[in-house]
Length: 402
Ligand SMILES: [Mg+2]
Image 1 (cartoon, protein in one colour):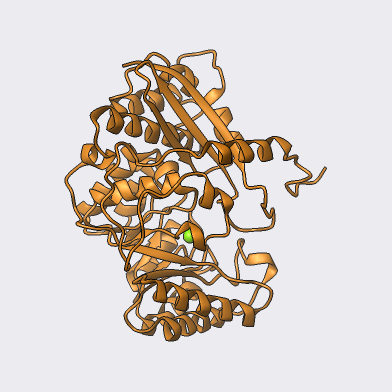
Image 2 (image 1 turned 120 degrees about the horizontal axis):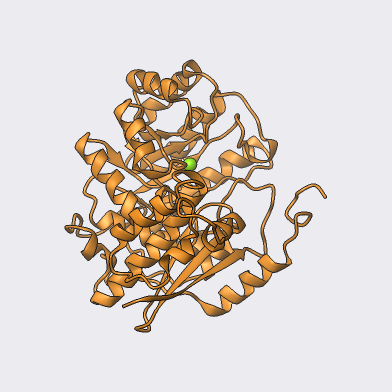
């Protein structure tokens, strides 16, 4: 089997809000074609236009090859071998960051092909079955017109999630730092007020996680937050400090009564090696596309297992990323929960319409993925509409300064 083409699709949600703190408003989808009629799909979570450039750009020397050019003619059924060649072949521009993010989309497509070629779901090729079913968690998204509206919307979501059967939920409580929602800044005490309200609404059985999105500029502030939410039985506190403050994370983790989680922006096992060996986190959070695909995410999961750490990936994109996270979860025993917002509860049309979910949520659980490959196919009508929305998008329409 040989790769005959690599096609990229930059997609934009027609209803996008450039002021929103959400990366689910655009995406890059890749299709890798073969001479045997099997096509694999993948996506990754970075600026979609930059991702396309990383994949399609030509190159002039052997230290800096184009990703697409390196794939053409290869047998796709060796994702690990191809990963190494893409990584080394693009190293002068790549090694970390956007190029590795883009390799992630291609790697996912190769695992999709490998599964389809073998007639099995990709997880069967990735490792031993670790779960009889998957436990999804709901991501609760706030209404941000005021603090009262914020609390009210989060408690409403928590009640809805519980009534739907969810046994786990992650709530955003971001009132300071670079990613405050639409200027709704407030005192650190607001975080604990949201957590308390959601715990009261969701009841004592719900597993709760808290994401503050890099809110705090010091270990002391982050520690006070962790101590104040600990009585509400929080599974972990996500990204309390800036991503590069590894000294801060190491100190915070050694003193915090709540597990500390981080890693959504890291690329390659090498960045996770530093995060984990410096004992910065209790929960490793690779984004499967960004870290370099299923090949690299599986390596990170194994590194976490060696240190008795949990893995809870970041997955905030279309149904492709959801399906890929399910594949990793199936072979990762220390991945207790998995991000899955049912499409009908999500605002993003990209999430709702780009693919049909393979996995049907029922009574707090998702079944074992059974379809060949990663288990989802593209909705061609949605692909065409979102491609057109991307072609119409201009820097001005996206909120940039002319
Ligand atoms: Mg987060």
